[in-house]
Amino acid sequence: MNAQPRTRLEQLAIQNSLGPIDFVREFKRQAHALGLDLDVSLSAAKRWMKGDSGKPRDASRQVLEAWFGETIAVLAGPPLYQCRPVTEQELAVNAAHDSVSHAIEAASALDPSALEHLHAAAGAAARAYCITPPLEMLTDLVALRDTIYVQLDRTHKPLQQAELYLLAGQVCGLLSSVSWDLGLLNAAEEQARAAYTYGNVIDHLSLQAWARALQVTAAFWSGYPRRAAKIAAAALDQAPVGTARVRLHSVNARALALIGARGEVRHELDAAATELDRAGNDPFLDEIGGELAFDRARRALCAGASYVALGDGDQAQQEAEAAVQLFASIPDDQRWEAGALSAQVDLGAARTLRGDLAGAAAALESVFLLKPARRTEAIAQRLLTLAQVLGTTRYRGASEAVALGGTIEDFTSISLSRTSMRALPPSS
Image (tube, rainbow, N blue to C red; front, side):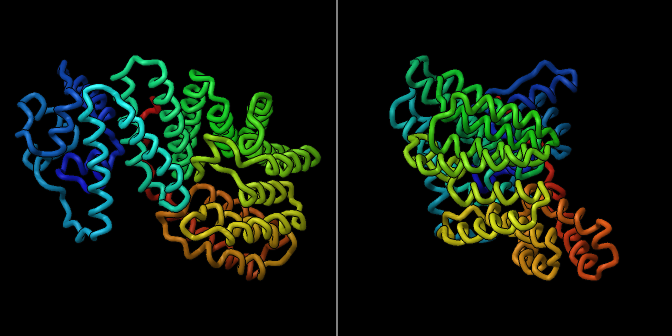
């Protein structure tokens, strides 16, 4: 689906995170709700959204008007806002996307060039994740996933299917990360589970390990740290050496910290540091990079958060400061902004645990400047946890604690998950 909608119908589809395949499924469901045995083909749905094939027939019009609450004349017309002028850079990017989509769809059968386009698009998405607001990632990822599904229906060649399952797993994993950023934990876990299933189908150990790590993250943030630790331990038994194990050990430390297993936390973090010395050669995780990679900055981020959970202010400050410095050393166009700011929040929490409220406020200054569209759920949850510490007896009545707590409340009240709650399409 285009970044800039061509019709009001396409605009509404984008706003509801509906790729072409999901649109077709939802159309049939909406028709059934009206008592109509009616469906629409994928090609017809795409023509409607482009607005170049006339208006839908009467029965289809009835479904669309009941579904979106607008007349067919409006739905078939232009988007209901005045688009800002498109820059030359945006025009070039959009033209490239359209060219790739047309080239893939033009192939009567799946050929190497189609797979090349898809690998390039999935790799670019993995790298763009670190610097792109979640809602901007969402539509492109869903559209890419749907394109991969369409191509799976076009080929019965085992080797091509295996490549497409790998791509489907990669994109579902990215959708898991975006879902969590938006505060949609159930969707994040479902997408991670789908990614693992694709990896299992093709016996791809790196994809399976990455997907399991995403499941671990969703589980401990959902309040199930023991289940998270159990998933991580099982995954480590077959995970490849290097990056896959670094991530699993690191997120397992997060889970174990939430159940107070201090000694095991240290063991997992040490194991992650050891695996870092063997990382860098995974043809899937390291070669693609971006959200699939897991470096020393991310390991330090997990370490800082783990010690915050354990209430160890001194160790938490040491690890959080290391994470802040490591993220700062990464070029701006490659740095994971949400991770870098999460490290700042952990540093603020560590200083709060040590009684340094002025230092905590200083650590959070850059966090509070973050625009709502970039306020991921991880940042919001970290801040809410810090607010709980500020509300304890130790700080009750302290003016600095009251002021900082108020700023956190204002920030989290307009964080991304609280202002942009939108259900993702199903994972498969």
